[in-house]
Image 1 (cartoon, rainbow, N blue to C red):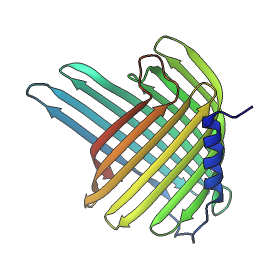
Image 2: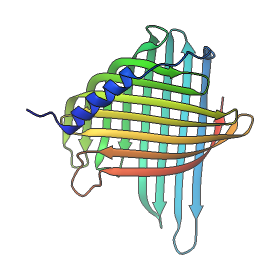
Image 3: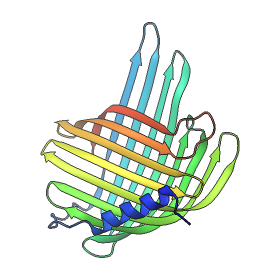
Image 4: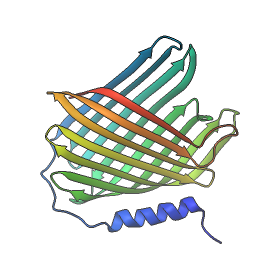
Length: 242
């Protein structure tokens, strides 16, 4: 029996990530706490009144061989007093090094996107990751995992399924003051496949302050009736690194 397209994609992409060639390792990253806070807001008046708010907090703690990361994000938008977008995301990931290049990870993710047709989508996964490229200017991680997902639609339909995950994280240090980050997460189950891709260009403007331009794409292969499969969000945020 032919495998679903989402399953074939997951297996093929995973094979590419796990067989990618490696580059000489870069210096060890600094130990301890680090993170960033982002904030962006727009308010317009005239024929229509539009407001939008995008906030993001990232906190990391590294104490080899362990690394912990927490991401909190909130986005709201309205037009002429009517809410047109509202999304909240919380994600925790713990990693433990197995060798210089490989590591095991656990990931907890909860998303509440009130205009996607889902009341919430949550997942818990365990898996294996590998630092495929770790040079001075380019860094690439690939991850494969398995776990479970729970979701509920606006009509109250609940689903609990086993899932497979594919993750990718690429960083390009363009110059001492600018960088490009691309992340990809695929969560595939029998009821739906979630694809989340975030592209960010970050330019430092003064010491710990930077400007970040981002494109966030979220795709669900199966959505409730009347909803679109793909949502995109473009942001321009002020970033404070600590």
